[in-house]
Amino acid sequence: MAYIINKTDGSIAFTPDGKIIDGASNNSTSLVLFGKGFSGFGEGLNENLIKLLENSASTAAPAAPLKGELWFDTTANQLKVYDGTAFKPAGGSKSQATAPTSASAGDLWTDSDDDQLYLYNGSAWVLIGPSHTSGQTLSGWKIETLASSGGNKVISSMYAGNTRVCILSKETFTPSVSQSGFASIKAGLTLNSTLGAVFDGTNTQASAIDVSGTTNTSGTVIAGGNFLRADAADTTTGAITIDSDAGLIVGDAQELSVTVSSNHVTIAQTSEDKDLSFTINDGGVTKTPLKFTGGTGNIAMTGDVAIAGNLSITGEYTQLSSQINLIDGAYIKLNSGGGETPSGMIVETTDTDDARLFYNNLTNNWEAGENQTYSQVITLADATVDGNANKEKVLKTSAAGLVTVTNVSLAAVGSAISTSDTSSVSVPTIGQVATFGNQWGGSAKTVSTSAPTGGDGSDGDFWFVREA
Image (tube, rainbow, N blue to C red; front, top):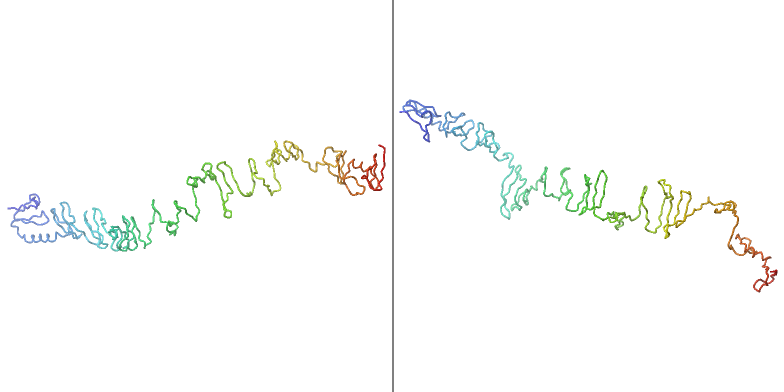
């Protein structure tokens, strides 16, 4: 009677009917199955037992496997189980120096050279960990617990070549046990102080900068202390360039601005009616030699002004004090633009028109006067030595010292004519000549119609009486 072979779940072990004929064998599975009365079944049975012991160890998978059947892959040196479709690793990882071949998704492999674990994802081996090889020693992140006075703190340490480079913490604390390079740990990332560790690269944002140092590590890495501060007074040893026409703005209300437009520079005091002053320290005293007065639009200058070059004034010049103006130049030139108008000097008086000294270009003469009455200023060339031939002319002496006039009328000049004074050059009047004519001799000799009195003469004088 034939055997019907069933699987564990009760289903037929093989097709078509799972029967093994008496006296025959069946190769429908990876083992040889024997029917009743099969001759020489002992060898086949023992070989089946050996296959079971070695899990069909071979470089090739068993033929006609059943779901759940084990096979030791001698190529990969790995035990595999048949899942109804293919043989897959039965569990654990393969430890060897090179990646296993013929791997299936989910296989694990331990690299015996580097002490690293890999997972096969169906197409490639993916490193599970650690990220460093055994030759590289501890490198990468490591979760650690550090004791502190506030309790244990869980931190994440970054190692490179078995050296802790930095610590990542959620809070600030001081470790109870000394940690090399980490006297205290800050919330965030703390670098190992013994390494001189720094952040190097490009950062788009930073909340703070350390200004405690001023030593630059290179021409492109600048210490924080060398940056100008916006929140406090600061100093720079280099030039400041503002590469913008918007320029410079100073003051809590932006009162002062220096701007550029079409290469023209404007310095502006923008507060209404406020001054723009330039001050100096003169021997410890602050002085303001130049002030632009906002309330009037005027310019106030204090002190001496030295001008090298020409001074052009449009409008009037007003001298507010009575000081004498000193001019080192030889001339003051008026009408320098070529205008033909009377020009000169005006002295302010209380009259309708002030006193003036000016050159009249219409008569080509200098004139002077005041209150709208002006006359020619006489020069030497205008005078004459012959007042008889040139009437109404100013007189001057000739080379011989002579003056010619038609007539001369004089008031009393000098004293009475004396008979003893022969050096006087005074010009006598007609009255003095007549008086002298009444006298003769060395003493006074009187000629009169009346008798002299006692005080008229001296002893020995003569007296002549003439008819009235």
